[in-house]
Length: 622
Image 1: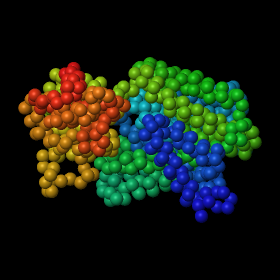
Image 2 (image 1 turned 90 degrees about the vertical axis):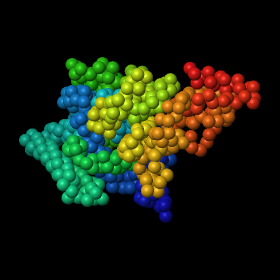
Image 3 (image 1 turned 45 degrees about the horizontal axis):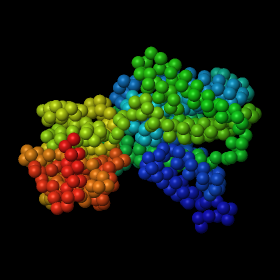
Image 4 (image 1 turned 120 degrees about the horizontal axis):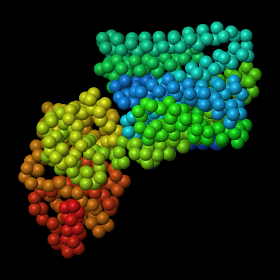
C-alpha cells in the first residue's frame, strides 16, 4: 500500500512525490516565467510541515542525509564541469579576488554578524561563519538561467558559488577542529594534521580522478555507452574516500575533478556535460523539496528578533562589504561589482552542512549550536525568495542583462537574411548575423546589423559572443549539411523548439531524408536557400505588419494571398518562424513578418477591408 498505518508514505511513493513536485515546480516556473527555486521551496513546505503528507525523516529515514550528500557532490561536480578556464576571459582577476580575498573576509564578517547580531557564542559563530562563505551553486544555476545576465557578472557569480562552496565547507571543518581542541583532549597538532591530510587527499584524488578519466576516455579504453556509468562510479568513489579521510573534503575533491575534466579538451565533453546537466536538474529539484519538507516550525520558533536583524545585516552589509572590498582595484566596472555584491543567495549545501555541525557542537555541550540549523534555513529561504524575484529586474535596471529583449541569431549572411534582420530590428528585436565567409557579411554590415565573422560553433564564438542574449536561432546558409550540423549542435543549448533551419534542396528524397534528431525546426514553409534567394532577386520584399482588432490575421491573409509568412512576433515578444504551427488566429498586436511578391493586389471587394489593408500597408512601409 502507498500509505502505511502510521500515516507515512512508502519510500517508493516518497521518491515519486519528490520527483513529481521538483520537476513539476521547475516546469511550472518555466511556463509562468517565475523563479523555479521559489516554487520548489513553496511546494516542499506545503507537502511537508503544512499538510504533513511528506516527512523525509519519517518516510525515507536515515538515507535522507546520504542522499542529500551524494546529490550535492554530483551538483558540485557538474558545476566544476562548467568551469572552463577559457570562459573566465575578463572575469579571471575578479574570480581570484572573490576566492582568495572574499572567502576569508566573508568568513570574518559573517562570524562578527553571528556573534554581535544573532547573539551566538564565538564557537558557533566561527563554525557557522565558515559555512556562510558558501553562496549556493544549487541556487545560482537556476537564477542565472532565468536572469540572462551579461557574461562577466554571470561568470563571477557562477565561479564564486562553485569554488567557495567547497572552501566554505572546509572553513567550517577548520573552525570545528579549533573548537575540538578547546573543548576536548584533542591537540592542536593532531587537529591541524587531520585537516591538512584531508585537504591534500582531496586535491590529489580530485586531480588524479580528472586526469585519469580524461586519459582513458581520450585513448578509447572506455566504450561510448559506458562513459557516463564509469564517470559516475569514479565520482562517487572519490567523494566517499575523501569524505572518509576528512568530513566535507569530498566536496573539494569532486569540484577539482570537474574542473580538471572541463579543461581536458575531451571530444565527448559535451555529451558528458549535457547528461550531468539533466541529472543536476533532477537533483536540485529533489534536494530543495527534501530541504523544505524537513522544516520544523517548532525549531524556527526558537528564533527571535535577532534572526531577522541578522539576515538583514548579512544581505545589506556583510555580503556587499565582502564583495566590494575584494574587488577593489580589480578593474571590474562598479555596476557589476554592485550587482555581485547584492546577489548572495544561499542554498542546500548551507543548510545541510549547518545542520551537521550544529549537532556536533551540541554534542560538545555548546547549547547555541541548536540555533545554527534554523538560522541557516531562514537565511536560505529569505535569499532564495529575494534574489529569485529581484535579480533579473535589478540586473536590467543596472544595464547588465544580456539584452532587454531576447534576440535572434541568424546563421548565414545573404540578401534575404539581411532583409529579415532589418525587419527584426525595426520590431526592436536584437539581431546577430554570423557567417564563416567574410564577403557574405558585407550586406548585413551595410544594413547596420551586428555581425560575427567566423564559425558559430568555434571556440572564438563561444568566448567572444554573448549567446545568452539570443533566444532563437535561424540557420540559413547555402550549405544544407552545415545547416544541419549547426542546428543539431545548438539545439540542446537553445532548446530544439527555438532552432530553425531552412528547407533542404534534396529534403524530399528518401536517400537524403534525415531523422528528426538531426537538424532544426522547419522554417516558414520549408523554402530552400535557392528559393528564398530567387524571391529577393525577383523583387519580392520583406514586410512587417501589425495586426489589430480591425485587421485580423484572416484579413491579412485575404489581402495578401500570395505573401509567404516568415515569422510572427506575439505581443509577449515570443517569436516563431513557422506558419505550420497549428492555430492561425493570432491576437491583436501580433506582428507578422512576410515576404510579398511585387505588386501583389490588395483585396478590393470590401471597402472596409480595403481601408484596413491600406492601413496595414502603411505599417509595412514604415
